[in-house]
Image (cartoon, rainbow, N blue to C red):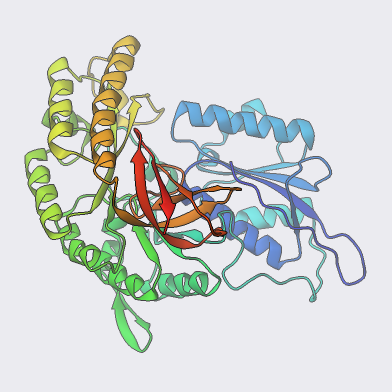
Length: 450
């Protein structure tokens, strides 16, 4: 949950309308929140952390899983209780009936990416107090992340039809941004002090396919809306560039040399989801995991220190003991660096519900999840132990009296591990320092700044 605060008065001394904002869900939703807040701030609205006393509350919801829907409904309930004037937006707003059934008095409900509709609803709930002296925002817009890193969303929606997912239903098909627009935003962020760009979309490696990789002018040259071309251009900005949500299409191989050259970070976030061909077929995911293993080995030949992060689902309908054992064997062979695992949770409206496959009992899901994470933990322990004695570049996220917390190139914020840095000199948030690693544990590293 992210919030931002900025009080504001007009030139006449009047207090401008204030909005309390709650942002739930994934980084893509966070970017939506940033765009809405940027527009509201540009129009003179103040942003506050407190529902009480605000003119209204906006809740940006997540509607992917039942647990996420429950969290969203809880946030709406809190806002209704503390304020009473609530605008609901985001993925859950794409199907408003459950919201309206529980909270019939919400002021407005909109779906994801409907920025103009949200702002229009705010105008109705609390008309803006225009003031040319205060209706200003920084060039990069308002951000809900720390100053030193930012999410860069390059497209909306998704063309894939994975059977467990309703994202295309909520957010539509793939809609890519022109490459020059992406680069202009990235350049503004870098000028504002951002040192790490986290590239996100629902399917990052499909970027541009919907617009046939159309060119747009950037620095006097045409730039294609293509995964490789955008990666190369972002790599010229002189900051860390981290790739998330990369579907393993063959052309992903072309980007690995850019990582070896340190144009972009040697890091790929690829949601493999499973390894059993039977389960992958039911999920409507690519099923040739042997070929994927070959590609992983080739990636490591080109860029030996590449970090591979992924997510997996256990307990998908029809998953047998044999399927699960195959997954564990694949995991041991792949030796991925960072892994998340989820127990399958039915999603209303997903086609997986209609496949006629036998549900996996909850107790079996829990056992498989535990075994999966135990297997990956041993892999993680070995991999991190191999980094002891090495010197790594670390970006500082949080400072302390004697020990700071940061991340290496192998660690994305909030989802991966951390590097705890002892230092005799003061460190500041956003510093990138060289750290000698002295010890490791299951998920984190500990070292000293040199």
